[in-house]
Image (cartoon, rainbow over all chains, first blue to last red; front, side, top):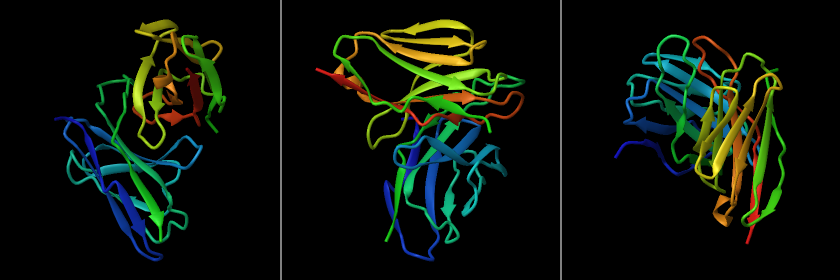
Length: 117
Length: 113
């Protein structure tokens, strides 16, 4: 059963705590992405990775960190430096074509809803 | 600042009518355009994608692209209450090897029985 799995579905963070959100895909996709969505807002890109052991900052990377040690996995850590972490976090992946093909069809996991205690 | 703009709505249409959702984008070099549907509390799901000027039809959905006007739209024919959701427009605004998408804030569609 192919897809993108995010866990946990709900997560609570205490002040000063780092928390890690999991994202795993078995679609053999090259690229993976993390987005944040706030109520009534669109998706904002946090980090993305096109290849193992390489990743780039998106538009709102401050207070977050990622790793890409395996093609299938792209965990996101919300650090204590992120002062307003309450949001819906979405992981996506896409298959990258060669050359200048920018089709980049992104598919999303079910999301993790993070709240602050 | 490269932007994707959508009317936030809500857009309300009666069941069976045509719903028209619009999106404009600022980067004339954009190449790929996507429409996602997002039900309340759920993650986005891909509805349509379009790369060339003109219309692309898939069942009750039609995507329309006009690169000269930097405008992409989504038409939903014979709207059903199950179409009630937020529709997100996404644009690949940078060419070459950059695969980022920029999303609009979404348009909330309500289809009334």
